[in-house]
Amino acid sequence: MAANTQAAAASFKSEILQGIHNLGVGVTRGSTAADTLKAALYFAGSSLGQATTVYSTSGEVTGTGYTAGGNTVANATAPTNSGGIAFWTPSANIQWTGLTISSSFDCYLLYNSTQSNRAIAVFTFPAQTISAGTFTITMPSNTNTSALIQVN
Amino acid sequence: MKVFTSKGLLDRNQLTVKDVIVEDEASSTRTVATEWYQGDEMVKRSVWVDRLAPLEIGT
Image 1: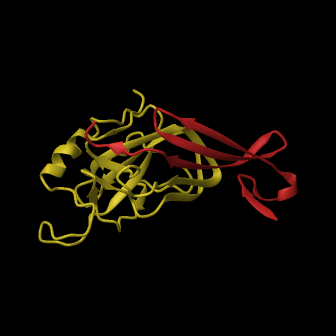
Image 2: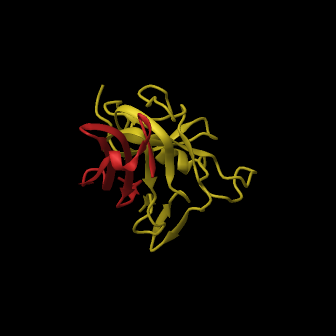
């Protein structure tokens, strides 16, 4: 198994051009509902990266306080643009409480559960374990210079 | 004060705590891990991952 690498899924880039993903609330596809997004955690060396196309349980963490599929990501902020840059950030931090994951994990997959669990991006961090604790992924300010996802 | 740990609820005065802070350029993150020890045994660990820069879709 190869290391996990941080990347936007290559499939996501073409899918946004097809209007498949809806990260905001707007008039698209006959529905104004934003898609449901989720974040799943993966063990180190699970080979996630640019080539990841969908959520999979292969390599996903297991442990007390963790449910397969991960947590739903708050998605109340519509994508927007400024200074020629489009950007989007989840509207709340992603957090697991009462968590124990004893083996090293080092990334989360942001994916679209409304659209057949299609991958959006892999975000890595230094490998961690959690013991009877809380794991929090803090979201940045939603600006064209600091948002979670940016399209130049 | 009680603290929930892998050994259940323990008195705060039985525990030592330290924060381990790592800034990682590769992932553009600053990570703060809070580790609680009963003697030499780690009994609780919580982590905050703070992303410092956007993921650029075009790259």
